[in-house]
Image 1 (cartoon, rainbow, N blue to C red):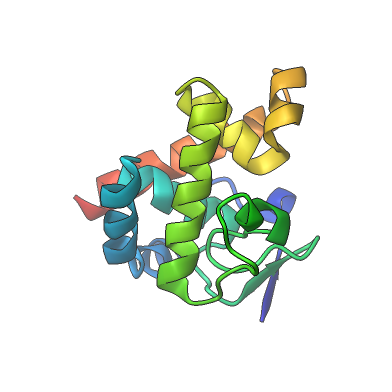
Image 2 (cartoon, rainbow, N blue to C red):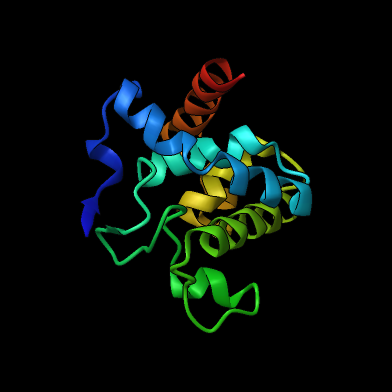
Length: 147
C-alpha cells in the first residue's frame, strides 16, 4: 500500500514514474473509447493522483489509480470503489465524463471538479486550478513520452 497526497508530488514525472504510469496506457485507451476523453488526460489523472500505483490510498481514503471515493462512484452506480486497475480507470474516466457534463464540457473545470467536487468548482473558480494544471502538464509529458 502506498500513501499518496496531492501536495507532495514532484513538479515533473521522473523516468520511473513515466514507466509506472505507462503500464496503464491500454486501459486508459479502453476508457477513452468508452467516454470520449483523451487517453492522455486519463493517464494525466493517474500520474497526478497515484503516480501509477494501483494500491495507492489517499489521505482521505481515495482508492486506486484514479484515487476514487465511494461517494464519487456511487454517482456512477457502483456500491464500492473498484480496486481492479482496469475497472478503477474505467470508473475514474466515467466520473471525469460526468464532471465534463456538469461543467459544460470545459475540461479544465471538469478536472477541478474531479478534484474538489462540482459544487466547489462552480462556487470558486480558483479551487483546484493547480491540480487541473498539473494533470494537463502530466498529460502533455506522457503524450510526448509515449507517442
